[in-house]
Image (spheres, one colour):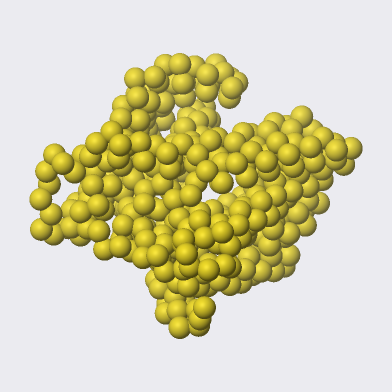
Length: 446
């Protein structure tokens, strides 16, 4: 099997997908930074604390339903590879209907969700009251946010990577202007931030709908595009495993934060600073993982095994190069990055103490990002769930338990172990899938 003919073309195609997606990932935190910058200049810090509590809760809620993006990407990429335009439109309609249903469900269940979330946050009464106000406004953006997930997944799957970038830039710019108007101009404080985000999310969602409509000329929008229960069952089968996998990952990071908190405020704050490095890692590696989703799904849709393997190798090469550069960056300039993130000497010196773990992290975590992308492209999400269960219960928690005597070093060791276990177990399943012909029946061994 000769894959050399694919490589040079794939390098170009991967980068055409990856650079807008990396830039999109960089812009994601900007929404929160704008809110923080505006509220940070108000005399009462309670408003900033309320938005921090509310935004963190929404991050957990929305990230839980991240399968709306990932599941749609893989299915769209395969239909795109087969040239099935009508199937692409049907997938988009069904994903949007599912997103709307989940969003409306979140609105209906907001009271118990917020009660549990605020109780877990355990903020002071004044901040909790303001956070409740923030949550009660912003929850109405849930349908728009989840529709954006479906739209972004569809755009990535159809190789229109500039679309997500356009949506995020628009949302940030509108949010920035409305923040200034509502908070500084009208004096609405944290409620103004919630209203600004709400309006920015809906504008971004409508922009996404307009973009995909323009990319589907000549399509007759009929009721048949909404599909049957069997079609939704297919979507659910792909997405339910991603949902469990995402919840497990969220719980693993919540456990990491909780165990750090038990070691004192300084360790908790230092770990929070160092987790920013993990955000930088995700920003870089997710771009290539998203590219892998789109390209791998396309070649699997064509039943082109050689092209699929060429995608895996090309994405692996660029992911490893990126991970290596990040390791060098953290090793050489990690202290400077820490100083930019905090000016408190105790926290900065503590963060430097554990910086070597973050220097190691990119080279360990790269495989889980890459393989997630390949399995999402293949719409084979069950192994993502099962390997996450094995990694969390069989490696992460036992490793933390065995290394408790090492303090925070043991906690970081467990997190590194989780990333390594995810890559190793999913890599083993990847090899089995190719060698058994599960993805490409009758096309030989790996």
